[in-house]
Image 1 (cartoon, rainbow, N blue to C red):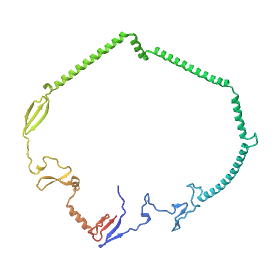
Image 2: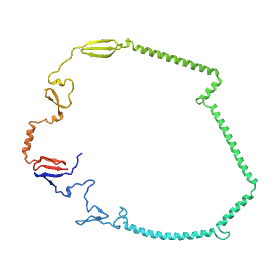
Image 3: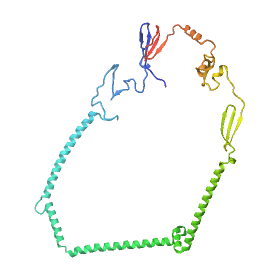
Image 4: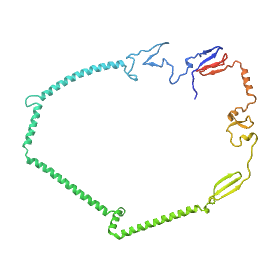
Length: 355
């Protein structure tokens, strides 16, 4: 991605650098997402502009200029504060009226509680309590025990009902087990058979023991077969393959699976490379590099890549001669430097873009 840089344009005058500033207008200056021009007709604060005709001006805002929200019909801060004052005065009057009303009600309650003899709430409550105590004292012990007996009879009836429910549940479970379909009473049938047929149970136990013995015999036979096969694997019959090779000169020695060895004699394929290629006969060259002859006249790899070598494709004459011709064609061409470091070796007319 390209980078935008802010640079200072300088031209060397033979002694020092002259700084050049380009004359620009607002139309030539670009805007960004964070830097934009302030436009008087568009950028205002609550309708007030920063321009007075063609003259710049500051903006002073008062409570009458600032609205409470962005709604077009929203009240200003000044109007809202005035409304608060009116509301405060109204609430104050209502509180005063409520306070007087509460004081009147408190006085009425005090009168009701501490009223004349026999009419106050305290006196009424005392009389009710005295009546309850008198009624309890007049109730006989026999009447109270009769109430307790009724409670005991209810508890006995509850215990009997629970016992009857338990007996009913046990009977239903027994009936389900005895009358279950054949697919669901397997455990019940086996238990009944073991209890009623002692001989059959003994026979089944003997059959299981016999099967256990047969399984043990089969396991032993399997182990014998495995051992025989492992022994066979070590015999010469199963080892006609070659498991090792070694080379010494023109002689190849091979070792068979049974441990015996044999030899083969090959032709002499030794060849000596002489001359320029003697340095590259054993290893590959570095990929995509141009080849040169080194100081010893041997083939070697240069630092020039195949891509760089391809740049010369289509050249019809000496490159330096062509460059010299381009320079002579325009004597006014000057060098251009860029960066933050002051250039050296300048001549008059050289350009420096400093940033």
